[in-house]
Image (cartoon, rainbow, N blue to C red):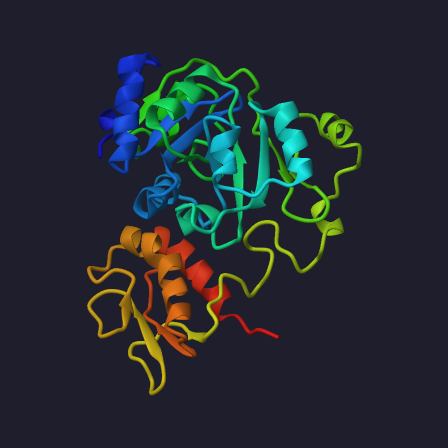
Length: 319
């Protein structure tokens, strides 16, 4: 893809229809929200979600926020606590993201949740974003539409400057009115936890709930609120041995490239395919009741860095 191949679309019926078509084909489309521009992909498509990480140069598989057209669409994916119901009634559509237990059969890609049992969801308060969500008719996973570690974009030109040539299209909806990311509240536990301050003031959320939000270090210490907080995480039930050229007796081989194995992340050695397959294959190893798992070497470049990060955590010593 060349820089010129990122199409800029108008926020009219034709532009939104083309954007929805790109999404349906597994493409990446940036679009405006009231906070910042998001880099959208179908949240149910493993390969499309892996392309988000590839385009951003994101160094690890962090949970992504799923954008939805309305609260009923969110309730089809997540279990809402009474606190979550109150916050949704008060602040949706708006710059509030809630982390909630997700419905296991909802069809969301495990790359979106990064292997956790929760899902981050919000209903954006932007006419163009909501029109795109209605036009597409499905959940859109969307982190900020910028290269990893760079400034979040608040105009379509910011998106093109950072990601031109890496994504399929950007819908130009003008400048984002809020200009900072959404507030994130974890409502999956006994008490709501503030994970990120953002476009909705914390004081307004606490007034709505009638209680003070906990901070992550005040919540249950062994309950991760985001990936990377525990050394051993994303782990299958079996013990994992990395950088294995061949399987030893009693091991199940998780391969990469042209190797003899039981499951292969990518027979052709494609890191995008391997990223898309990673969490699904780890679940399959559990279904196989694999007790000892050998994993082929993965090149530590591009998406391979994220894959290796998760595999190292899967292989870390456990209590």
